Length: 248
Ligand code: CTP
Ligand code: MG
Image 1 (tube, helix red, strand yellow):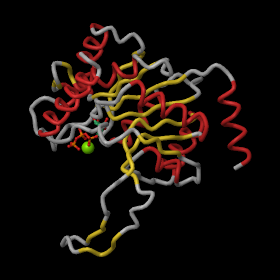
Image 2 (cartoon, helix red, strand yellow; image 1 turned 45 degrees about the vertical axis):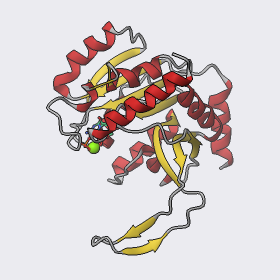
Image 3 (cartoon, rainbow, N blue to C red; image 1 turned 30 degrees about the vertical axis):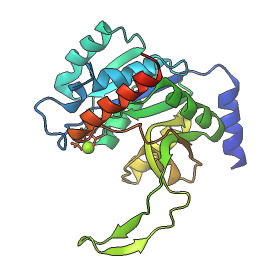
């Protein structure tokens, strides 16, 4: 790992240019609305715009690539420009799977970028503070992801829901996004995954399978992903608490 740590140090020692890829090309099947869920509003602002705004407001981010479904590309470009999202450099069409959308987004970043953040637009309660904490960890480790330490007992079952295993709870996490990588590391990992036809449910796993270290950053349990319709009420309640705490 000596070589990797010196590469990480080299990437960390100059003025960095960081890109963010926001994934919003899903069809929201579990959400079940006519509109793609990324355009549904949470307390008056769309899921997509909330996510983009958090990256726009983070000082560690210099460009934002938004990946959306092909028919939504022009509308999305318009909406983000109107909302003053000046760091959005490209809005592009995604692929059939999250992994292929992430690959397309990554291929569209500035080739000189030092670090890349990959984020599910559906996780729209992310804050600039969370984004910055994960960037700081990625500067040290090379790769880092938001998550929350798990406090429940985890069991594995078979397909009939019968328990087959109880996992050690200690040091187990629920992993979220953003996931942030040294761009060269992610480039190598996604190239190898494609070459070896490996699929992974998150971007970190692409790096883990090559043995790269990935650090998790505790962002708490409120960085939720909007998956089902009930998550809208939950997100609005979380935002109301945040506003109260901020004295708004
Ligand atoms: N995503 C994407 N391209 C895909 C699939 C998903 O960019 N082909 C994005 C989604 O827009 C979302 C994130 O990846 O921001 C996480 O996916 P998920 O929460 O599963 O959203 P959907 O795939 O849209 O929902 P569902 O699985 O219920 O259809
Ligand atoms: Mg999905």
